[in-house]
Length: 385
Image (cartoon, rainbow, N blue to C red):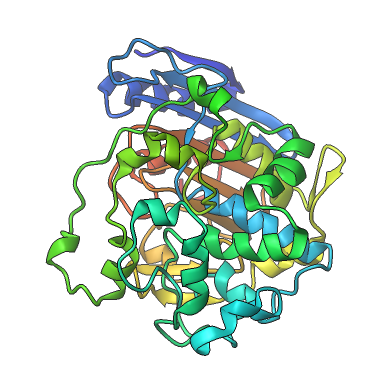
């Protein structure tokens, strides 16, 4: 059985054994899992390797690209400004970013870009990854028209959510998203998480291993469908996450780098009522906003049932058809391409995260994600697990 290191409260031994089994089978290459309960880290474990040749062990300080789990930190950044009274979730985006009002987007509200309901789920017209990395991508989002009526349905903002929220952050705080996360979130909390990755941290990165081919061939689909316009422009390529340009970009939807411990540290802000070890980032009233349901049904982009509050996915509603293994109650979460996840369970004061670099297929988590979460909730004695 593969060796799993770190701290694990004995009641979570089955979770530790599940990780060891996944590593031994080869389904998992290297991964980390962390759980915080009411402010205490009861699980902080890791194992496996950071390279496909299996020469470099995954260590306590290993970080990796967590894909869309980054969106949870981007949303937290916006909620912090809402909590400070600097940003109004019900105000038009154009109040803070006037250029965004072009082509009928004057009625797109801040909460719409936080809940995937803005109608701007991607870029109009062909765009390259090099353009996505740069400032012209922001200008293009400001110029284009929404693809559906804002606020009426969700359409997953796969690659550009960080661009949209990041520009609002920049206009209101004077800081780029990368800078805001470093100075207002990761710094005060002592969390090893960043948008992109500084050059000095590259030796600690576990390079992404791409997932199996997707079950759908985007090149064979209607090029005018929202799915293709969102996911295939530019074409998805997981290996891009291992390049210098990717790591240096500011894309808070998809290029956050961290580990399970740092995600739990940051997002336990929500689970614990806004304050972590004396650092207050959110008011209870702002946390309540998260649970205002904004969309609950078949997502126009992904084509599966999803449920969104303000900034996060919710686990009660249509999403139960997609991921019935998620815990119910006052729970918010989101996951990343390949399987990473962060869950904030306010009812039980549990924050759970799993990150890995060998990507699986699956839209919301993976079979591995489900196995780990089930083992954790079984240990907690929650009905249904």
